[in-house]
Length: 140
Image 1 (cartoon, one colour):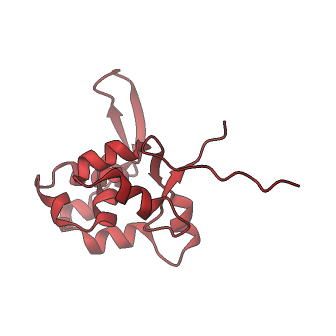
Image 2: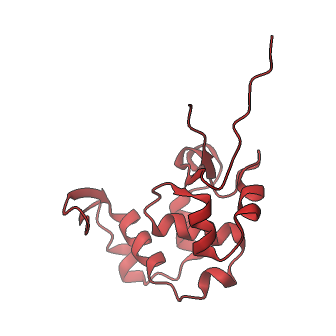
């Protein structure tokens, strides 16, 4: 019997935050984010359950988690040099959250965090999972 083929992670592989990883770990994502972010107390207590969000490209309205919306907005408003000053794991985590955790190709993440795709591949393409960030290995 032949050994199963392992999927090769490349610069075109997409990354995302696996929320199931957070649920299965001893960590709570919301608590983790609140302890790491400098959110105004009024914002933190004013978060609505659901928010209507209009896609600027399509005009489509969709309901999103209020907390996710606040986090996405927060990470999109960070100073331009924030990602360069952050660790690689934190920078990639921030980019994915700013993108509403829509999967992004490694090369696009690398461009946003100003780090090489090779370093990102080595960090997130192996068996160890950092902050729930995983490659999406699609079946052919």
